[in-house]
Image (cartoon, rainbow, N blue to C red; front, side, top):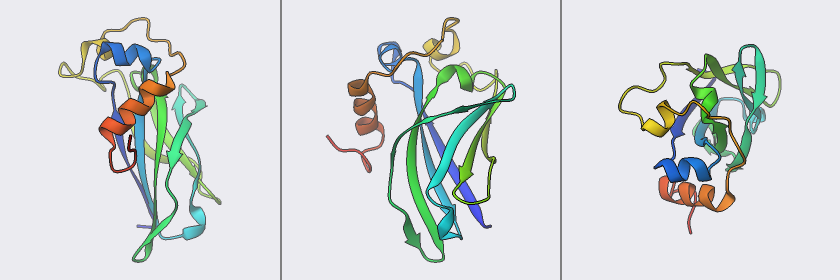
Length: 148
């Protein structure tokens, strides 16, 4: 395998955090490639109905060599409404590789176990995330990368 990207989608903990984050979630990507020149990722975006919407990067690590692989961890915010529509999470590597598929989204993304504020919000147009609330989520959920 030449390249891979693993991802984690972190939803807000409750309805208050959901509103404070501007109805966004956080995505952690762990990218691995055999070709050092492909990192860092050039862009990460969601393809929704044929429209590519770039995601805002919060942070990325340096590139680390792990045996014959090169790895990088990065974090992005994503409007939750995009995860509830038919769409794809894609990345462009530095160099020639474009449109690398990471995951798909859709109306069945969240089952009954998902928080009601995510599943049932009919007015889920995103706003700007409050930076202090975003930082609090990152410290709580990803303590290996973010400390108080």
